Image 1: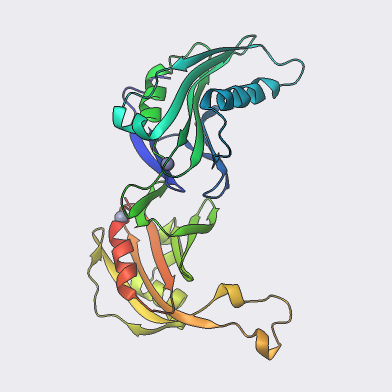
Image 2: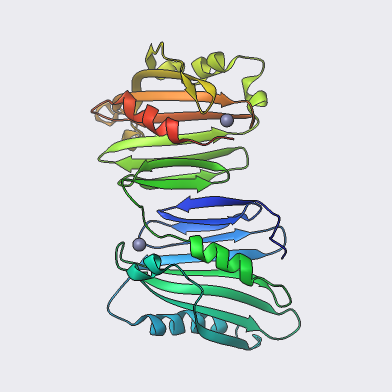
Length: 314
Ligand SMILES: [Zn+2]
Ligand SMILES: [Zn+2]
């Protein structure tokens, strides 16, 4: 793994954030803020694993490491190659980081025909109350120490200040740290993230292959065709969003929480509408369409504009 020349990018997920080589992409993701798992793969193999969970009890960090590593070596069953483990490695250098965390660094390698190795660490954060297990994987003969150290030293596990960065598949934006991710969908042509905050709902949707979706329409025409039915007032403000002309409107959107697929005909089952603000733009550089929708009783179109202003789209 020669990572000297390759580009690095940020991943941000449930307030965990870190830098990683740009060509490591999400291979698996499950869970929520309290506990979850994220794996990044390159074209060959898994490269990075991240697990987090609420810290329970007062189990000392070295015992938790033992538990995790035991689980690791037990996974392959009877014929698993033996795992050689080195512990107590000082992989995290930053003193200010170490002040909030009890960290243990480790390295393991398997023996046998196709050996694997990993540098990783486990820590307990006193501020967000989570236990974080992270490891960078490589083949036996690879020198992965440097990229592993770089990644692990950039790994942070809670929001600093009032906002948290969300960054996946090259889509990056900041949200108030009390926004929680309700659901996500990562499809080849479309990424969709839905957040909640005090009963308000925020959707961030990025659609690839913009030209194909536009079908010779201008972005304004496409936006009108796709979202016009829920917009009552179009804004005159077309000020740019990350360099692209933005479109903004307000209206009423159907609250998906009140939509029932069965018995929809019953009058009391009628979906409820909520004030909606919506904005969008066409990222010509990345050939993508961006749409942000915010449904909120208190109706704050400015909030959406503040979020849109943080989006890095190309
Ligand atoms: Zn934390
Ligand atoms: Zn752009």
